[in-house]
Image (cartoon, rainbow, N blue to C red; front, side, top):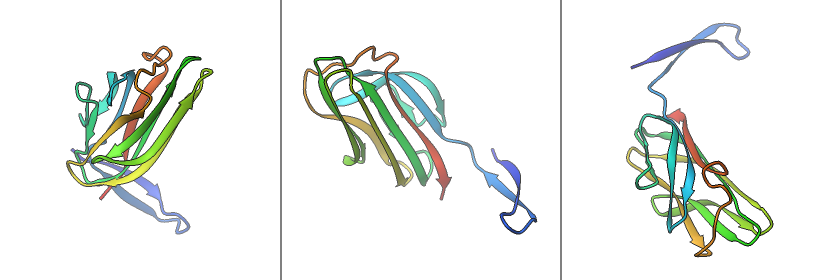
Length: 145
């Protein structure tokens, strides 16, 4: 399915027609802490790229994507989460005690079938504060290639 949008050309004053393929976007929350962090509750999964059983996003299209994670820890925990693409860390967040918040964002170019996931890279036994509301993993296709 294709959609289109008329946009005035920047600086030219002439309209241009842009075509967009099916959109790709997801948001999942309620993290389960283990080596591969799984966000169980899916709020949005346009394009069906996110799997809430494995915690992995598989790119349905080649393109530039934006990914984010956030989580809140209670007063007595430390947690280090990383966004990984095909097993390679592209950004990481470390939250240390006292109701700290870990946040990480990455802009990456993916090929069709590349896998993105969140990994806990240290601090076994850490915990989250109200994970059903205070943790999330999201991503969207910024530019199809």
